[in-house]
Figure (cartoon, rainbow over the protein chains, first blue to last red):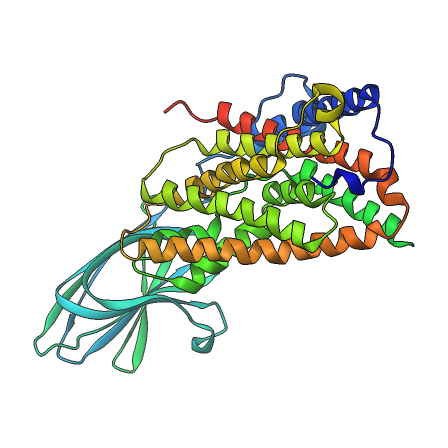
Length: 188
Length: 232
């Protein structure tokens, strides 16, 4: 490469060896004292415990919740061009698993509205036409979370919804009105 | 503050970030769920992801800093970077299309060592200690192959849909080149400013030693991740 453009004399072999060795030892020190304990919980020198770094690597698949989960079943009959909206009150980060199924294709829109902010702040996650869907959901904010379904066919369709998780109450929006349904936790 | 000390502060800061954060360099979060959900060609999203991967990928960036450290002419920069780009394009495309399964951590460890190699060469290590120098053009090309294999393994961690696969990889690759040009221009301008000060050659040796340290650190981090993998 363009070595000719370097105007200074080349460094001595001694300096190159020292600098490379220092680079290696510094990297090794940082690796063993901080990175291995913090990232992988490997703490051969005990420095991770001393500096409180090992806590960073304890990533648990378990998320504890304060109260028992709830499970819910609901069904709706949708005549031609009828629609319904069904939503669960959930806290930020609360998990839910769900399946819904209908005996013909429905237009659906899975969405959520942040608590106290109303429809204009609604966020939609998926829309489409399907006869069934299932999934898991982590509430991105506190508020009401659920679906809008519309029967765009010419015959009456039966829709069934199963859900379980840290859902609190459900609200049905239908025919211009809405009503709330209480859901009891599986354990009091 | 003169430009020399400004750049020194910046490089010290960069080094701190590298040693402090040492995040695994993968495609994460909403980008990951996007890549997994996509079915069909999506030119601009994949271009964006490619560019983002390059601009935020300090393993690739540190290597390129090493490569252009003593390149004073833009034409030389273009030459070397083109060799690097050809190298990583070949393995990125072939790797994904041929479904080559290579362990991402080991590839990333080699990428870390590529930084060590370039820094050692910049420190005249090969000339003074080994007695011969590898052809740097060939070396940059070969390490380009490894960097591409790294990119390919990152993309393959997701079950990419076959629908629009070629379009999407080529878009990703174009994005990588765009990101590389953006990042390189910044680095080249910063180095050019620093070169106007006499501190450049005085601190070139120590800067490359720091670069080497960063390379060792990245390699060590990736090897740590390799051995910390669950055994299944």
